[in-house]
Length: 313
Image (tube, rainbow, N blue to C red; front, side, top):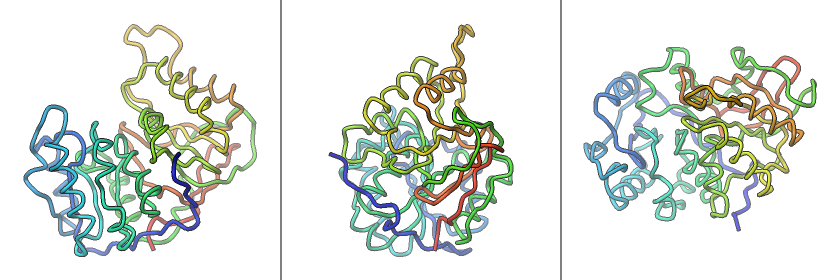
């Protein structure tokens, strides 16, 4: 059975300051040097960036062996000089090493761990195993492709304990249950990974949550299947509302209906879940960082997300 987590008792990691050390591991897929270069330079313009050349190793669809990737993560979790961990990229692989990671080290020294996509699994590990709030946000190989506002937003998220407040560009529409405001705690991430964690000790805690979801490359029927599985597994029972980010390249190649948007609308309406769409989160041109577990409110009438807690202390 999944471990219990109480959001209010999860530790909030300490804030970063310019010049602090950020470690860049590769706990999942292989890293292309050209793809990582601009992101590494952006981080290095403000922080001391620590990474091993081994992040560019490749073993099939992984950035080296499980032993290499687990050792690298644990080295940074245990290093008191490392004040944040921003992986180089996602891609499949982090689930293979979750049971090898040192939760005690993170619990003793809470530090921000940033990631999304496949790193949704690592974020849930942070909550379930170490009781430390992670940050859902861009990784190194995406940073160089994001608009400056989103890079600045990540820096603010890492350094400023103040609540993020209203996301003015998180425009969407009210969901199936009309207007009003719904309150909860931000949780979620990649939809496919969320379903793959079911039945493991690291299944996402979606109790009293505003469930944020995004995905890439999943055809509409697979998105339908994932949402249906979450419902049948009981994970949606405590969800207060759903925040829909990007679903990039998720349409049928021939354009055959239904669209992924139609699938999401139908499933959420059937499940009687209010939603706000159009959140700048995911694999597309935008990716706004947020603290997993932070209190928030969803204004369904105006399609706004209001984040009421900071990601750092």
